[in-house]
Amino acid sequence: MNSDSIHNLQEEAIGLLKKLIATPSFSREEDKTSEILEGFFMERNIPAKKYLYNVWATNKHFDTTRPTLLLNSHHDTVKPNSQYTRDPFKPVIEDGKLYGLGSNDAGGSLVSLIAAFLYFYDKETLKYNLVLAASAEEEISGANGIEVLLNQLGDIDCAIVGEPTQMQMAVAERGLMVLDCIAKGKAGHAARKEGDNAIYKAIKDINWFTSYKFPKVSELLGPVNMDISVIETDNKAHNVVPAQCKFVVDVRVNECYTFEEVFETISQNIQSEPKARSFRLRSTSIAKDHPLVKAGLELGRSGYGSPTTSDKALMFFPSLKMGPGDSGRSHSADEYIFVDEIKEGIELYIALLKKVLL
Image (cartoon, rainbow, N blue to C red; front, top):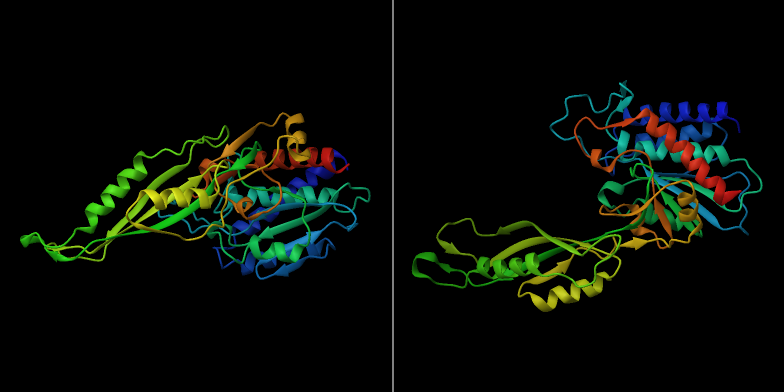
């Protein structure tokens, strides 16, 4: 495929992204964008499948004797915040920037991966099969996104997960464990100094969370981080000592620990009762000598550890997070991605995949 063909793919990708931006696709409400994506493939005579609001397609010469490489990104978005000054659903290009909700996170990555998939779709001698999956519910880590879709896709050997990384390689990613903690005391009248104040017990535990350091520090992800994000009591009266105090802890886990190890350490050191919402979003890493990573290094891409969580956390096979755009723009007002970032992203995806597939 010559440079003119790649240029055509770039233009198709930008056109598709404009359609996606113009169509609201909040998590669990991605029905319209799933129809757009399914139609995009069908218009190009590529059989596409849909399960719930997830859309996927395989390369033309899929061969079950070969390993399979997944190209995945999501088409759901968060809701626009109150600071938007533009219509979040009106795709506009100004000064080389394509504005619109989901343009950066992760529409640019999704359409760039789709363009790369189209480039290799009908080639016969690929070393890997290709599966392109546009998944739902990534922004809420929902159960009906990539997690349920993987059951439909068959065996996957490795993946590229499209998220805004400035086309650098996120070779490791922090895991996320959210804890709901309850400190228990005894209700009483404040004027008579009765009861056992649950807030004071919670404060002792919160002080432990803010001072404790897990000893294993990752070269890529740094230490395990724990932050208190919510605190409340069920008591609204000023003169009643609360019997319960609830607080939420956001725990970002590096690849040196399992969630079970971190949870056990916490349980042994606080008086409150901790309960993990789930152990699903685990930390992940991909080996430095994996073909995807080696190909990226040969193209001058650098590897780093990502502090943010993505669908990569739900994959049980090696995966590389990489895509056009800047994570710092995600969920921001007047979200945008540079058009040239999309064009470069497509070229780099294709160059990287050539090294792995051909």
